[in-house]
Length: 204
Ligand SMILES: [Zn+2]
Image 1 (cartoon, rainbow, N blue to C red):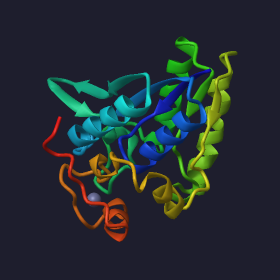
Image 2 (image 1 turned 120 degrees about the vertical axis):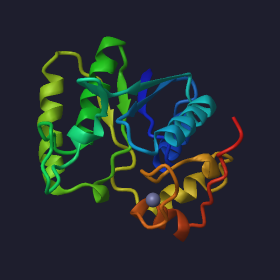
Image 3 (image 1 turned 180 degrees about the vertical axis):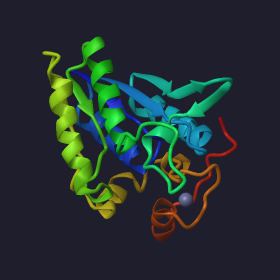
Image 4 (image 1 turned 45 degrees about the horizontal axis):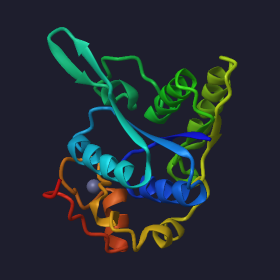
């Protein structure tokens, strides 16, 4: 069993990695962190690496950026919804779809049998799932068929918290999209509610 796990360095990724290792002690689990140039990138990269070091056999990080003239532009610019001021790039609804495409390409090219993706129902709109299904169908046209598993799809955060509450890495995970904990986004609010204090800034 050769498993490719999408690793965003957050609480869900920690939970998924822990469960995957517990349930498949002998599996080869490869962690893949796909980064779109969000301000949180340095923190999430570090956190994803720690999760991989503890639970996975290997780790790789992709940094998706677009070169426009002399400027390197974060891929998040063309994967997020257009703003009122417009968007330079063609709108790709929801960057999660790019994650899936990237994961499938990587899995097929490297002979993975399973893909683990921490996508959750509550975090996405019905529109997302329409495109998600279409993307999956397209990805599967290649002939190779890695199995996509979404173990957290219906999970309430309380359940995820229960799995990871005693994990030594819980306070080393990063959740906010900003380069500091903004304190107001959904992810920061959730950490506050469950008293998960980040203390992974200084150690390697
Ligand atoms: Zn935040």
